[in-house]
Image 1: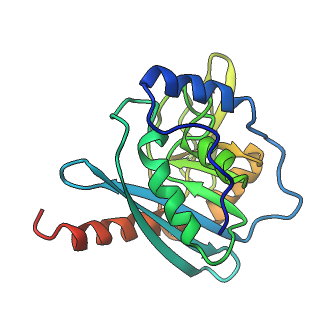
Image 2 (image 1 turned 90 degrees about the vertical axis):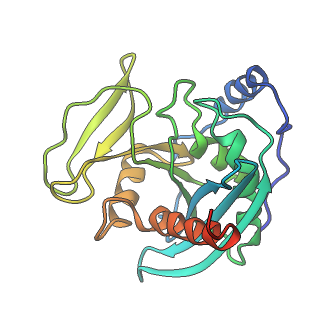
Length: 229
């Protein structure tokens, strides 16, 4: 898959990275695609035991047939320190490398992380959506910012996630009785559409299949690369 040129450098100070986030956040679109996405690329990343390598996985999952169409992995050196809220500057170079290996172009990206539910409204799902010029959804296992009431216990129940008076995402119960996940807009989608895709992608497990399978892929790759670590 072809990915547009990255419009910034990766070797930045944290202050420079925040400046990039604020600049690119103005480009995030909440307009849904004309055609509902079918092929969802789940993205996830892990790090080598010494923290110097990022291992990324992209799993292309077909919503209609509920099967994996393609898997790709890549790894890249880590060039950015761990700073809360700047996750994409550590993971995105390897994630982009994995996406470029895909033989088919996804209809949308699903990131194991936040989209607009981020202090600067520019989590990793926003960043990846902008860089790839694709619809993107943030599906995080934990909350970064904001407050919400508990969603009802049944599958499909939601509660708005609010920060400073604005709705920035949704707490979504993907399975009856399990802890919710946090869904937010990444790029070129609306919140209702993002929630609908996350739910249909989670037929059996708490975590949607694209990102759940990407997590398993990078974990297996890490074990193979660093046996006994």
